[in-house]
Length: 113
Length: 109
Image (cartoon, helix red, strand yellow):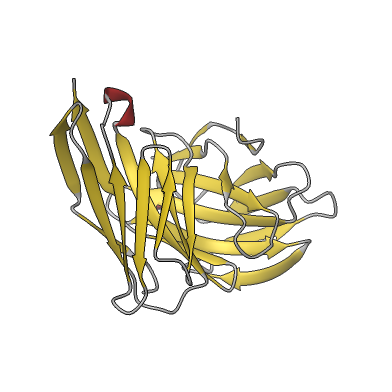
């Protein structure tokens, strides 16, 4: 058990809709990362937060947004969903120090129909 | 892209054989990490090698790093059926982690 909790595990929704994915990091970890994994794209870095502040942005679409709250949990909001957004979305956390490994949750599988 | 690339994309071996996977990357790094992913599950950290290290061992795992060639390799010795998974390298540059596309390893009992 990595200590990182992601909810929900599965999500099925229609095109054009909006969903929110939630992540609770491992106790004590200040940094949260979001990744998207689809069959043809591998693991794509979306965004990183450290102690409530955005630290780095990757290939995150403008339709997507995220935030990290004072209690350090994070939410990833996906709007105007398209079929191509169907993927596994992973949250990972780390202590934020150099050399700290990432601890991954088990992901949210999003299916857009 | 800052992502690494693993090679080969897929590897199938017999139980007991060694498995070698390679990773190439493009930017300067602080360290490089290897992760394992069982089908549909979250990634699990295996081993970290710092940019000033050339080789590191952990159990049946051996990792090498050549910063001049911007490449790393992961060797799994005496493979087991339970090693069947996808393996990813991740480059850590300034606390941003970029993953490669992964090597899918199948170990045949």
